[in-house]
Amino acid sequence: MTMVAGGVPPAVEVSRLCRTFRSGSEEITALRDVSFRIDQGQVVGLLGENGAGKTTLTKILATLLLPTSGTVRLFGKDITRQVREARSEIGVVFGGDRGLYGRLSGRDNVRFFAVLAGVDRRRVRSRVEAVLEEVGLQDVAGRRVETYSRGMRQRLHIAIGVVAEPRLLLLDEPTVGLDPVEAERLRAAIARLRSGGVCVLLTSHYLLDIERLADQVMVLSKGELIANLPVAEFVGLAGFAATVQLRGTGQAPAGDAFASADVEVDSIQAKDESWIVKLKVRRWDGRSFALLAGALKGSTVTDVDVAPVRLEDVYTDLSAQLAATAASQDSATMDGATLDSARG
Image 1 (cartoon, rainbow, N blue to C red):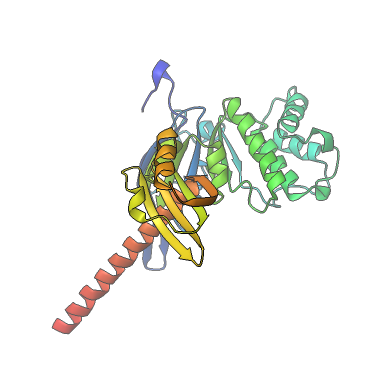
Image 2 (cartoon, helix red, strand yellow):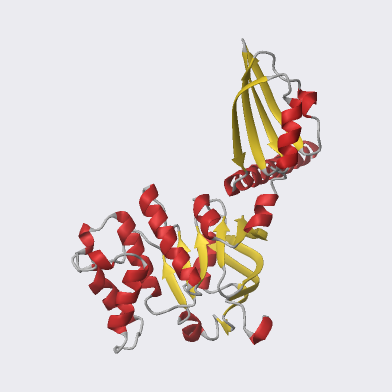
């Protein structure tokens, strides 16, 4: 078991985790040789296409599924041999409309689940009020849940998930279906949990959730962990810091005017008396600005738009590369089968 400074175990330590399922005579591998660790107090974003193994991994960490092989420890506790102790460290939030009692108030829902979770009866009232305050629902806690908006229900799920003071919170798609205002409220609630020392594993298709909240990004693809990096390093995989779009009139600047190791010309479009130049800059600072100013000397620029690289840009590019690799492998397999058939 790995220990960090001061003899404190990681919040999550996964070693060579595999999980297979049987479908008739076929064996399906959902997770293959997955290893990683999450330190206490971290927020980690888990990304991957549908079928990548995210839900399987989350269910194993939640002690709802057993590994086929490999080990999983939560705060040093083996989930297969110390199930009860490991489970006491976890809060799980799958969200949605299920799991809540619509005719009860928000406060009564949290109180009910607090008792089920084993919160000391002398502390139930104070814990319920504390978590309702934490997720911003105290003013509406007396209302029936059936009157709540979707975003309010999501925040109520989080209140229920943390009422027993877990040290690890598993969040699955917390902002799905929410309007921008409610989504931002929910992100703020999650951020407050992190500031309180709760470790969070966040699964989301909304890259803004990961970008705003996570310290680390993990990417699963076909059951394998293909990336595990701090957010800044993951964004750095793009190879550029920002995209710059320039619009102007008159003669369009020549592509070689931007020749530099720090600038890559994406496209130059000219039509009638106007033009658009799209660039990628490896860094956006005074030097890059001076280089562009020099390249555009004599040109009439009417608009400049600078967009810093986003997590979504990197993930989209990575997904495209994986899809192209898979297609290439499928093609190679098909070609080999055809060749074998021809030889037969």
